[in-house]
Every structure is written in C-alpha cells, then in structure tokens.
Length: 561
Image 1 (cartoon, rainbow, N blue to C red):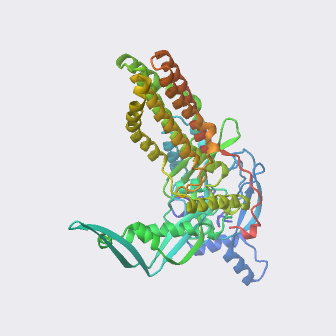
Image 2 (tube, helix red, strand yellow; image 1 turned 45 degrees about the vertical axis):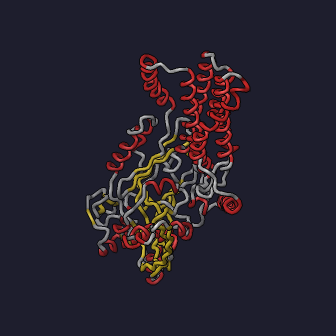
Image 3 (cartoon, rainbow, N blue to C red; image 1 turned 135 degrees about the vertical axis):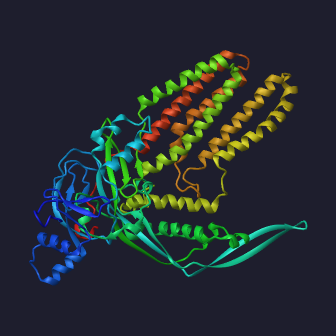
C-alpha cells in the first residue's frame, strides 16, 4: 500500500499528470521515482523473513485490500484502506467487507488520463442525446457513483511468419474470350502486431469492454502500485488462451490492410486473401491493468441494472440506455398528431393504398423484430460473452452444442437467402403472378376486378409463407451469423405484424368494395404494428438492463490476478 513518506497519509494519483499527491500534507511525488518508491515501500513493509524471501514476494505480488459486496459477492481491489460504501456491480448502498490480501502483479499498467469531471462530461454528453432515456440516468446522485477501476486485460502480441503464400484469381476478357489467370504471390510479412487487448474479468461484459476499445498500449508503464492510489482494480479470472483466436483474427486483418498494395491488386489479391493465408509463429499474452470509469444504475423496480463505462485514457463512452415508456409515448404523440393532421388536410389516401402502406409497415416491423430477437436471445442465454463462458462450464457446453449444430448445418444444407433478398424476390414475382392469375381467373370468374384481387391475395400469401419459412429456417443454423434464436422463440412476438399483413390481404379479397372493412382492417393492423413496436422497446430494454449480478467465489486469492 502507498503511504506518504512525510506524514503517513493516503496518496492520490492525479490522472494525466504522472504525480501522486498526499491528501493531507499536499506533498507530491512521481510514481516512477524509484528512490521515493523504495521509501514508500519501507514505511509499509516489515522485514520478518530473510532478505531473499522478502524480495521474491515483493517482485511477484503487491498488497491490496479486497472489498466484497455482501449483497452480490462482487469484489474490487484497492491499495487504500478507506471504506467502500456502495457496490459498483449491483449498485447496492452497503459498506463492503474488507480484508488484506496479496495479489499477483500484472506486467503493465496504463495510468488514468482523464479525471472524474472529464468522465462525467463524456457520460452526460452521451446520455443527453438519448431523449427517451430515463431521467434517473442524468441525476447528479447517479453520476457521482462513477468509480475509477483498473480492469485486468489480456494484451496479446501476435508474431507473423516471415513469409506467406497467397493464391489469387483474375478474370479478364480478350478478343471475345474469357481468360482466367491464377497467381501465387509470396508476401514477406514478418514482424508482430502488438497491443491487442481483451478484458480478463468475467464480471466485465465483453460487449461493454469492446465498445470502449481501443487502448493505446504505447502509453502503458511497468506495473507500479502508486498508479492505483485513489483508484480500484477488478480481479482477473479469464484464462490466457480464451481470446487467442480472436487476437489472431485481428492481427490478420491488420496485416492484410497494411501489406496490400497496387501490384497485388493487379493480380487479384485482396485483403481477405492475405487474411486467409496469414500464419503466426507465436502468440504471447500478458496481463495489464487498463483504466475504466465504471458506474451502475438500477431501474425503478430495483430488479434490473444498467452499466456505463468510460475509457479512462480516451474518454470513449459506452452506456446501457433503456427507453422510458412514458417519455416514448409522449414523444410519439407529439410527432404523430401533427403528421396525421397534415396528411388528413393535405392528402387524400384511398383505402386500398392505405392498406398497402400498413402492410409494408408491418413487414418492416417483422424484419426489425426478427433481427432484434436474435440479439436478445444471445444476451438472455449469455452466448455473446466469451470471457464469461470460459469460467462457466455449463455455459461453454451450451455454446459448443450450438456451434456443433452450425457446423452440421453448414455441411448438409445449401446457403439460405437473406430475409431481405427473399422479400425482394417476392416483389419481382408480383407482376408475374398478377398477369398469370388475371389471365387464368378473369374468364373463369367473369369479373376482372375480382380476378385481380385474388391474384394480389395469392401474392401476399406467397410473401408471408416465404418470410415465415425463411425465418423458421434460421433457428440457430446460419453459418455466417453464428447462433440465432429458434423460430419458436421469435414466433411469440413476430406473429403480430404477420397477422396484420394477412388481415389486410384477406379484406382486399373478401370485401373488395366496402371502405368500412378496409379501415377496420387497417386499424387492427396498425394496432398489431404498434404492439410490435412496444415489443421492440421491451426487447431494447432487455438488451440495456441486466439481471442483478450474483458472483460465486472465483478461486483463491493467490491464484487470481
């Protein structure tokens, strides 16, 4: 622990200054001043064993207080003894239990560059742009809960092999012939890609940690506890190999973007070709403490929590921003009422045209809902957090099972059309179905209008069937987009816009000349579409509010970092 050598008071690191300052006597020191660091260590440690044993321990560990929340079990570390009165993970207003431990030293530390006030400004700038966010997220009482925490990260260095062979194909036309040229290019790569970082704490969401990336590791320092004065640290529990594959992918992308030049492009080489051919000779990971301003906000019921994280070096901010239903409804009315009045007074919309517009809106709602439900499903199952899965055997087994399905599907099924291309294809089918249907039905029914309406309804039915089949076929089996939600999971929400399309289509064929039924069907479809929008908001809030955390014991103190 770091004490002032003059008065024994608590020291505070001043972000961006390379100065630690005593809170009591005002004395200032440099964390990098080795002589003064020795003086600080001398005031804190007592020599009870041989000099050799003492030096070995000091080289590998540092003294810290570990504060544990009695509500959720979350823990943070500090070199200071000051009592902690709220939990950063669950937001509980409690005094955390404290004990003294020895922690393994990380290899590097990136000191905080921005202070509390800059952190608040970065956060408020983001939140104030979200007009539908709950007002509680802007309250000063909440903003004061920001806490500077050094998060443990695995920082990888990926060494590229000296040379790689890239195969490429170039197709050109000459004299009426199509000529295919195949090339094999040797690229001298070599060197290494350094500073690829992934958080090493399972408690810190991968989504949040990647949202505030990157960190510039050039400014990092050899670990020195002095930089932790007045700040906290989380414990690492994610293994080194967890993110190795991701680090290699990032290194391959950077090498591909750097090495590609005009000559390679002339022979058909792309950055993707270089990435596929990339080979690594060595991957090294080292633990580093990186600076993060962290805050948690409970919802009104107190059963969910949102997090905010600010990069302590760059100020880049990521916030879970739920939508306040009351604010959304008021805002929607403010926007919708003038538009409705303007359209009513200035434009005359035929009932059939209105039905078509409503059907299109329902289709758009179905597409958005489908995409969002995939993300919500992954978040609910926690399939999107690699770090957490590495510390939870059951979760990792579930992910491996889903990945097994993907591999099996990839080898036994043909690639599927995207939802968008499926709908686009249906629109191209419209004139064909209308012409064929009209030609076949007009003579049979002796009613051209009825023949046209039946043909149109057949097209609507085909559109819905194609959409349903497309969505159903994407039940965790799309090899390009990884794990997807089962269609049975999506159906509980997505049936509403699909029912809206079906109702409007049925009215067009059953009551083709009765405006009242058109308007009634449009009202029902709009209600279903509005219900879907509320589902979308609910889904958004599911993504931006998390269950209150409950931490189990994450191993012995001597083996954590």
